[in-house]
Length: 250
Image (cartoon, rainbow, N blue to C red; front, side, top):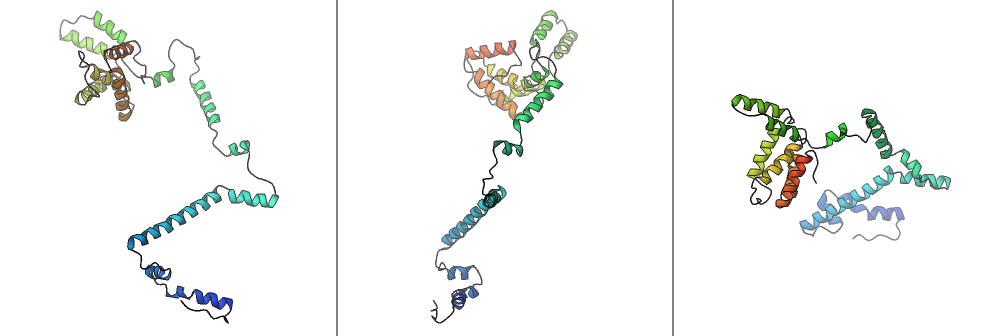
């Protein structure tokens, strides 16, 4: 280390103390200047990443203070002598008004569906949210009244039954039934080995053709797990589906 002369001016002393900066050429010279050139490589990288982390943290904090208006409020307060923190009403002016947006959406829905809330039938919005399902009552009536004597009668029966089955329901049911056969969600219930497959299939097909495959599989597995715990739960949810096929379970 160089010895500073007492007769030198303060400025000359400063230049003399910083003269080592002229010798800095690369990273190794920087480490040698601060006495870290003898450290292992791993520790050097640790110090480097620590410096980077510190720099990013300080920069982020300063950026948040600037963008958040803290410095501006401090400057206004020092100039006026009064706090300039906005109250709750002023703060809401510059923010998205969630409640107002929901009220506007409610008004649009009431204009689109002017029917009263208490009706014997479900509203169009409620029908959109519920599961789809065949009209079981009308399908049973067709099956009981139509006697199948030959192939022609069978085709007529199938054609009439399709009138009570939503579009895509049958295909989705078959695919889901086979998928559950390949990989059931639990042990088979004794005496009703197909109950788990049917529960999964009717839940998956009930989601409709416009729901995502991920949602259909997730809801079907949930329905299967709830409905196929034992014989009592299987009977309960099977009868529930026959009475209210559009109901969402879970």
